[in-house]
Length: 489
Image (cartoon, rainbow, N blue to C red):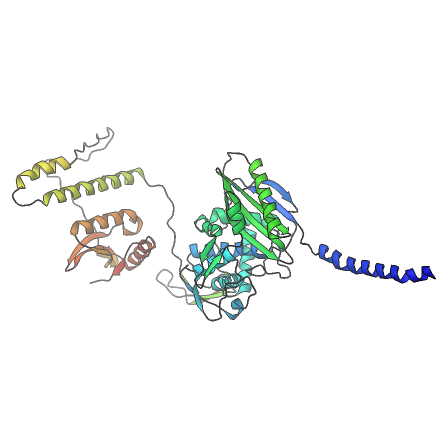
């Protein structure tokens, strides 16, 4: 009878144990898989890897790609940091972490960038994607195209923020590559990732990884990420004594344990990395512009092709032509002769300035002018004539005449440009000369002309075609030089 009394107790213990196993085992099974990678950022050499090619949830590490594309778009003229972005209802509805944007409000792009980089704001990330490509789905396609170009072979993006979505996966290896490319390709923006606080327009935001930045010597970025499916992720970069290490962790169990593991990996990297190594920068992918579903371009009749009738061309998979991007100057070494001419001209400008200042002398001291002028004028000895130079001869008895001609009105060259109004004629001529030296390719053959006005002296280049004047102005404006076109007459 006593044995029968103990049997319900045993069954009760078994039931409790089963319940405990049902609770505890799934919780441990839910722990996000761990992966890690450490590289020497200078050479790209892998110093440590564990599960580095396993596809896992990247969480907000995704925003590194979002920001990479934004920096690319800004650099290539698709959008400006000062452009106002209208927030969509979709962006405003994103779950935390968020900046708290409202549907319909406008905010400068630079504030969205700061919110995404520093606070890891999901609404800001979505708004950035929509501002660049029109929709988040379109932006995700561009993210995947860029990832492939960067060598991220096991990454698939579905959104701009990194919240868990089926198929939105990456690896520790790919995210380490992305962090390195972000550092080398857009160093002018990298300081964003080390800011403890930042002004995000609507409010000030604090960095999600400020503890690591404040406590690990040399740490200066890059990005945190957390979701239940991903665990606590981090791509961190640190520099000490010219050595730079990038460490990535997926699947941390908490912020503190993740930071401790990343610090351990960074220490490992600094121990293994050589003091001196050749920097092998990652290759920047070619710029391909916007993702587009197609655009219609009309090719009308023109002087170059009079036989062609108007034709419609469908550009499949190319960006719609909305904006003409300013071409970049072709890099080319300056010819030694041009350098010498430029130095001689600049030296002559200095001498002319000194002579002009010497001539402004109070009455009664005119006698000192020649001495002062002689003192400030340097004696320049001409270079000896090369022995193999070929000299031209002229018929005896005929004086040799040197004629300098500059064609400025033939062939429709009736346009000009103005590069500012200045208080003195000398200043206007100086600006004209410097501008001509800086923009030889488009201003070659133009005539420099100073025009006196009631309020100063206009510095003009005349004798240009309309096309060359427009091109010159656009190139000068890109260099922050004031310029506007002058029409015929």
